[in-house]
Image (cartoon, rainbow, N blue to C red; front, side, top):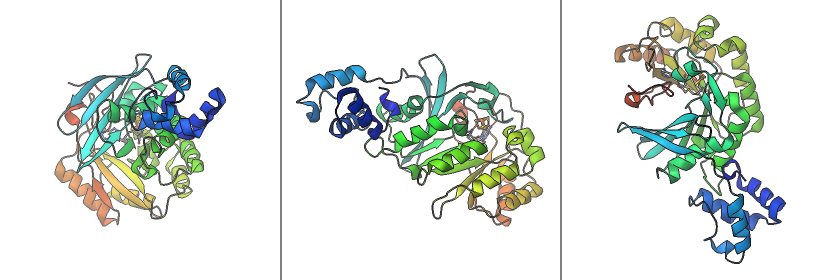
Length: 341
Ligand code: SAH
Ligand code: SF4
């Protein structure tokens, strides 16, 4: 049993199938693993009368063969690297802010979307992550690094909706109130605009899950260059998928816009973005470009970011600028998979 890939309900079904036992023991085992960080249930009172079952379960339980192989702390964020069973590595970032801690998780090793400004994109896709490898990142943050985590963003390596079934199951496991108990309203899936993945996610109706959409350009010619996925799913199709997405009441889409100086940040670009977003409830996050190892673009200076944000506000958009954190340890947006200088 790959315990990190199961909800408590899934575990109960497994216990029933394997041992003819039901919810009572499943809940106890689930609590021990996901709330207490134990790898056995031998010590729990629920198993005091069932030592044989406890021993069988200990033999059945499988944890992913993952280990934290490096950590980089720059005082503002902690990036940790996990080596997976096959030797591949993924990166996760812990971002404390005003008493809350956000964990940025990876959904793939690398990414095949090839966005021009993104270090992960330059790696290509090495493989998808399995459910337990996604959930492991939260489990490790809580029980290995002993950090509280109240928010999850799927903004690490990979395009979550290119690996949509494992991502959906990972969300279910992380949200399970009997275990990790991280409400869907505190989880954000970020996509470069994978329309089929969006439809699949919409059908799942995970209540209150937050969605971020990385737009970066509101005309197809420029977006085709920056985000090659746009060739497959052009802006008009993406907008249709967003209009059909079941947002909760008063819910919004978070629009991510990496500002590349001189490329996508003119007043005309601001106007085009506002026109494109008309009719969608949105909050726009402007992210000044973080240079990776290859610095293909120019990072806008403060004044230029202010100028672009003001232009968006003048168009009636609600805008926040994202302050870069973690650049020193290649842990900022778009830098995962890059080498630390
Ligand atoms: N694949 C998903 C999620 C991972 S990327 C997506 O693209 O949305 C997380 C965020 O980092 C995205 O909004 C992405 O556009 C942004 N990003 C990528 N490269 C960046 C860079 N060099 N500088 C700043 N942000 C970047
Ligand atoms: Fe993949 Fe997102 Fe990077 Fe694009 S920005 S290459 S979708 S991780």
